[in-house]
Amino acid sequence: MTASIAEIDVEVVVMDADTNAAPFIQATPTGLVLARDLDFEEWSAIAKSFGRALQSAAWCIGDWLIYGERKWGKQLLLEGADFDPEKPNRLPGHVFDAAIAATGLDRQTLSQYASVCRAIPREDRREELSFSHHRVLAPLPPASRAGWLQVLDSESNGMPSVKRLALSVRIAADEPRIVKDEEILDRGKQSGHDNYIPHLTRLMTVLRTTIPAMSEDQRDALKEDAQQLIDLIDAL
Image 1 (spheres, rainbow, N blue to C red):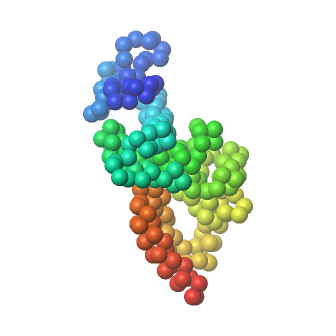
Image 2 (spheres, one colour):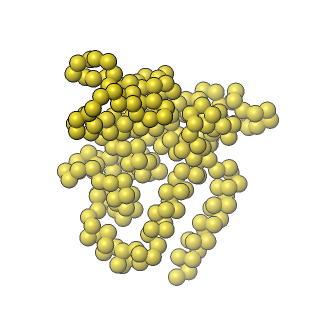
Image 3 (spheres, rainbow, N blue to C red):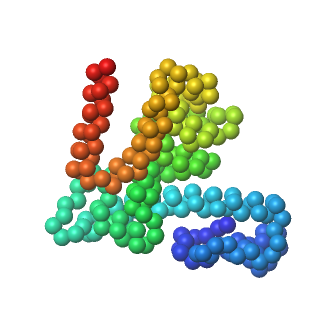
């Protein structure tokens, strides 16, 4: 499946590669249209095309948002608003409103795409990694992220799941490596894994997608709430 950026909002046609005949699959805005019976290999190949298209779309939309932010940030401001180039992690709200109308995606998704694209430059992105893998590494400092990318490049047992990569980043922060099941279980026994890790994982997932869209006041409130947790741990 190949399509230019200009074709994102129109029908995308999958051509028969062997015969270059008329399209046998059409991906329309409301679903697939199959013009003939498919064999298993053809059916399986469609999923790979979908995966590539979805991953490419996430990167393209994120880069598109960043381009608009950098080029037209000041011009897009509402009258009386301020644009602070020292805080590039926040797009003005009305820019998101325009992007929501143009793409049909929600603010949280768009914010996540922009945040990951802003953190990871194009030359550091890995085609073999999903966008979700990159999302796990996006909050890391560049040097640390480069170390994790080297680990993934050299991984001989296949690409780890997004969940295992996220656990590895937390457990092996000082010595990047993909952790084994035994290490995860041992850590759980020692630290009360069954009590807090699932909740912390869900919290981190939510915060990664919501923080970029927060206002300054909302971020300050979050910091105060997080400090209560730190104070609780320090007091033990």
